[in-house]
Image (cartoon, rainbow, N blue to C red; front, side, top):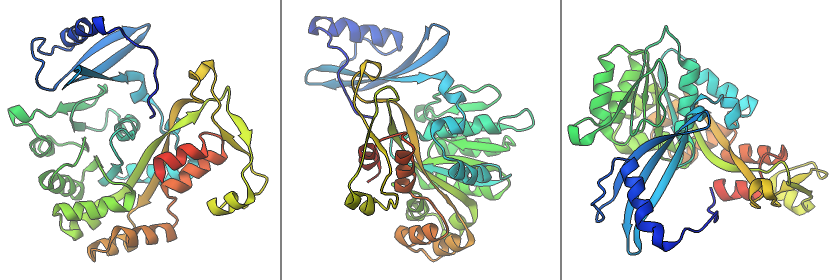
Length: 343
């Protein structure tokens, strides 16, 4: 997202406000020298809101960052997140498999966890045993066994995943593949009858395969275990109350690949409903890459991400930019916003 000012708090209340957040988050109130993390929960109307708190000492005093987690967001449908029908169909085919690995990739704050939670909600049923290992558990899902990593106690993604495999799960969700050990256990689980969902930090879908190989995984393990990679970004939605129409020049349309010269575009304007930003809410921009036999072959040959990308596009993959421009055409977001988050 993009930062903007809502209100200013007088300097004299800083110490008291920070202390109050520490007490609510069960953070050491006397410690001001090191970063600290915590969480607390509040009820707003009928909604239960979780807040994750991060304290960072600075030259101006302690900086407080609050991450607001609305539990109802975990119950969103994939359609609500911004999936277009064709993209959703490819993704649905991947998570409907009985076994294999499905990776969601993108930078921090791109909505990967929300996508995984929405997917788990679809897969969740009394007949399936679903176990997760997360850092941290952002949303608590009924009917799903959730584990939070605790490195101090020796519970890492790798040790947690190794234990989960012995608990006879049908579906495993690993919050993030951070190291070779976790990657090995995840792909081995996918090859032994489990559906494994996890995340990586790469710029696009093809790069996820090369990243796993760079970590030290054997190419044949990557090619045979990964069924699909979903790359994503979050773009701000145009405020439906004030967005305004405009036309692009023929030259700009041609550069973007649009053939319809009478196409209408929308841009942000700003009103009271959107705090004069021109945007309200966010929508996902997605790139779904099924790992076909051809792509698996390139993986075994240790081809570059760019070569994999070229073949994936030839096989029909819609890139992040393509998906973003499709949402521009539908008036969901602006051209400037897509260029900001994708290009």
